[in-house]
Amino acid sequence: MKKVQSETQSQNPEQKKYVDSLRRLDRYARMLDSRFRVPFTRIRFGLDPVIGLLPGIGDVAGLGLSLYLIGEAIKIGAGPKTITKMMGNVLIEFVIGLVPLLGDVFDLLWKANDRNAALLRTHIQQHLTPSRPRKRWLSYGLVTVFGLLLVTLAVLVFQALFLA
Image (cartoon, rainbow, N blue to C red; front, side):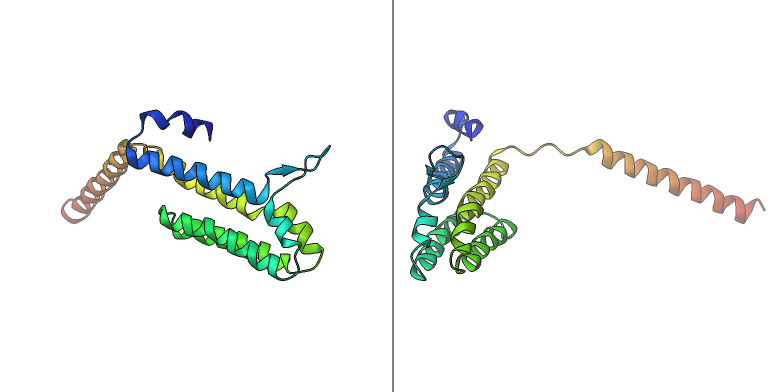
């Protein structure tokens, strides 16, 4: 995230839009999954596990809040593979979250929104990073080897037909 933040000054408006979107979505995911810390432990939690404590309605509300990240991912152009992974994270959290007590503990540990924010971070950073130039030498090498094989085959055929 720091790398993306430091590059903000030298970006065009479209890149700035992605960086701003990433910051906003990171804050949202953190608020839902890891904003607060249990004192004297490393356990972090957010509003999602707290809302999930409300029987029935809490899990549905948490699902709605989690779907916001997926909607934003679609808006910024995340691919179907990323969207599918995000939906899987939310679905797992929702289904297991329906089980009393076990679901609440799972919701505290799984952190689907933080996972989805990480997926979006990866997508945006790949989008912002210039693509590496292709290794043309590999293509040229393969064409050369293929050409040499064709010449060798032609010489062998010529020898077999006319010199035998």
